[in-house]
Amino acid sequence: MTTKRMLALGWLLTLLPPLIIIVLVAALGAQATAPRIALTRGLAFVQTLHIPEGDRESLVTVYDTSVASVKYMWRFLEVHLAGDSVRDTVRIEVTTSDLAAAPRWLEVREPREPPLHPGYTSYSFSTATYRQLATEGTARYQIRSTPRGKTLATTLGAMGIGSGQQVVQYRGTLERVSLAEPFPILLNGKRVQVPALHARGQFKSGDSPTPWDLEFWVLADSAHPLLLEVKGSDRVLQTVRVDLPDKRPLEHALMTECRVELPGIYFAFNSAALDPASDGTIESVAQVLATHPDWNATIEGHTDSIGTASSNQLLSERRAGSVRERLVSRHKVAAGRLRAVGYGASRPREPNATLEGRARNRRVELVRPCGGQND
Image: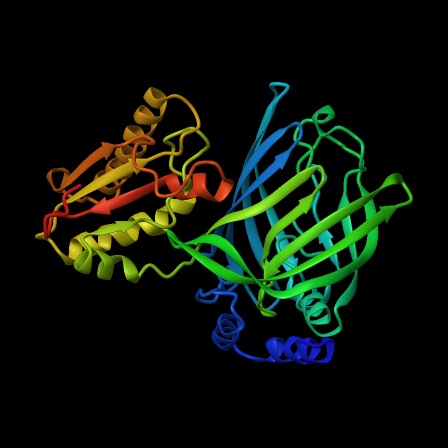
């Protein structure tokens, strides 16, 4: 495809509705299909960060949207190989004007900063940056982060919530690599491939002599160019799971397939404690069971393969039990209608060798006995 044709296609993609974008991507051979991931209240996504010093798992939920701004709740646990760790909950606000036009990404937040940091986005490119990359192929960009070469383990909670860590401004130019690469993601409990704009750039700061080479993959949707992956030599940030607020498919799946993976069920790391973001899904399950009083159900817990078989088995049992207990105690579902079982890591859906595979295998499923599908 010629450069002129590529630029024309990029301009067209920014104007067409997401569904048509998906059709065009499939026609080009990218094999990416998914519903739109709208930036709306109730949207939730799980991100993982791998750095030389350790790993972080984050749950981000959109808890409010208005004509003025979007408000996120960021809960995370970061574990360093040196043995220290930090867990925190942070409120983040991004104005709609910044979502539309800001050419800057706030990768690092200082402790005690207010939720609003004007001039930056936090979890996406701005629409203007996305469109510029799609149409022109390049875009000037800035990143607020920690200096390269400084070990993250020297400050508790570095890369997001440190203890007074130094932050610097990196400047550079993003260059588009491709318009619509297929990107794997777990969407509402199902493995799909979404179209992603791929860009790369080298960034420099006067406070840090080491240049920073980064690659970005963002959702190919100018209305919400969600960050799917950011990769550098010293870290990989990846969005591995997205749950949309619409839970209507749950009842249909139970009626037709007798089994459904429950999107929107979140637990604290290596724990059976339900995150408050799980409330909406659990309420939806309760409503379905109230609509069908003749249905009994089994709640299944599943884990990835990290840890011992015995610890995973126990964790899966406890997690299934937590969901059952919440349905019984808060939503008054009769205890006799619900059974909780755990299978540990014995029933993986995908290989545990990748971040997205492990995210796929950590799940809760709801099964009703029909058509011979009892387990």
